[in-house]
Image 1 (cartoon, helix red, strand yellow):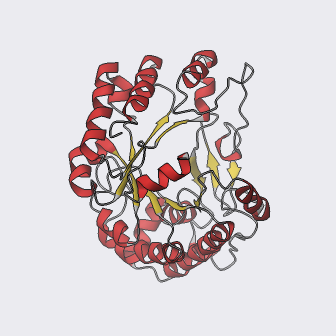
Image 2: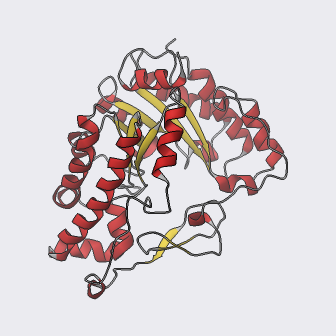
Length: 348
């Protein structure tokens, strides 16, 4: 069974051979850890990094424009991004529609030419997918495609005031953003992807960034329209959000989400298990704030074992991902990699 087939079986509760596990190394790590040690860990864990070979050292990643320190980046929507660390996506510090007076003359980007954060050659993407049928191909909208895009255009505080004041021009702005997003989705569907992804952070440390009522009124209808074409094709729909999204989850699932990627400790392992285990596929985002940052290797292994045994099922319905950022002790990185590889086959 290929990794693609195994993943799709896990998502569809069709008894995968193992739990799909992903370990994502943020590019900023390559300048904040000893490279030889970090690459050595990756080399020692072939289940997480199949086929990995150490690059020549020193390794210099090609940072995406949106992640370059001291080089503010204007994206396709005209938003200005800045970051304090190479490799780390920063924050929008320039909002092109902070003043509604600029709206009438504003022109959105073209989804035939760009993704919202950079150019794309759709013909080349389609050909690449055609040539690699055994790989799992995920297509989808850029991170922060709707709610966060509105925040980037208007500014977070301005947007919440727009919602509270029922600003009529907000509907026109939502329609404009949705039209762009629909064009991106049409291209991905034409490329023949296996899964459609809709990544958008909606949660804070406690509670969501907007009220459930605001989400249902302004954001959810757009989500549902954007997810409908993928749903009609029978593609699994993957939704990611950082933060506490417990009060929004029912509306997300109602919108068509079949794979929910949410953070473990922020939302609560027991709550996640009671809500989703055996029903909706959980793509569990492993803690980056507490246990893996400050715990012992034993506590890290206990965390992974607890999550797998609480949420996982022999039939499937669980995938897991960890995102490594600077600051996590390397001994904890090893413990995490060890535990993820160990418990991939927990139900085999």
